[in-house]
Length: 348
Image 1: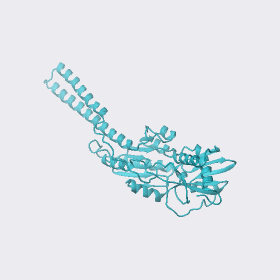
Image 2: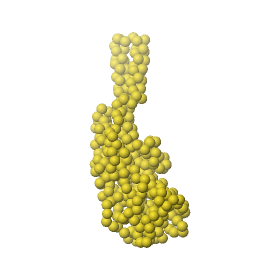
Image 3: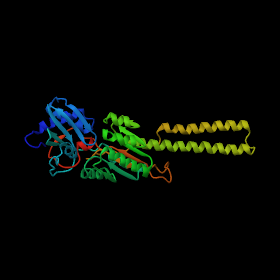
Image 4: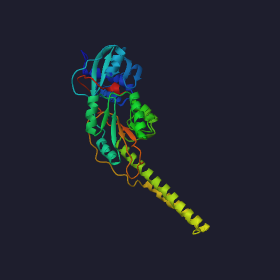
């Protein structure tokens, strides 16, 4: 919704034009919506992106800011844009030539399969789930409840996410971070294992991650955890089997029950048996399909405490942790009533 005499399409055109150079998913969504509404867009100049806050650029000779209320307060040195009542949600506040010009709000849509992923992770041994997001607290809490996430931490900047991950690492040891935006890159690099959603994510996130999922399917996170647990279980079986049989053969040989030639042949048989057992990891046995995908409204970013499955878990250790994105913005960004809280700038 514009403030003053500016039309809704004019507001979308200004915000979408400067967001063309943004690395944020919501920025690209806004640019696409602006192109759909008004056609071709001019390119901004003197573009600068501040991760976790917003962007500033020049467009048609005017200085434009797009981001969170906090970002506009920092840049304008005022009390910030109007804060009307209304439902919480993702929003990008716009200022033109140091004056608040309007707000663009986004509809959230939960990534298909997130609720099923939560159930899958619980089946795999998850004991704690935590959402880390730059969105406002009210919206994040509602989304976390819909997605089945136990704990929600909102209004976080990229450096705040890193601090939380460090704390989780101290509590849970291994931490897996799953993200797709520029804001997630520091946390992806900090985590024990970083997983980037590469199909729609940013190149920076992919560079910072250890694993890149080439399909936009959050269900693959559950598959990766299940495969990892299965491989660890098979590896331990092979180690214990090989060492146990070799030790038994050495005891038999030392007591004179096993001649050298028979011992050598038996050792080769043990090696082959261990190799064949290890090859079971290639078959994908034990990796089950996820539950049917579900859709709700939700914000991006979640951290999940992942405990290893009982069959292959580490005894005496807390579960590791995982963070993952939970939402995909709907293609149509819409202008509507402004409101306080999170926004596009919080997600930059």
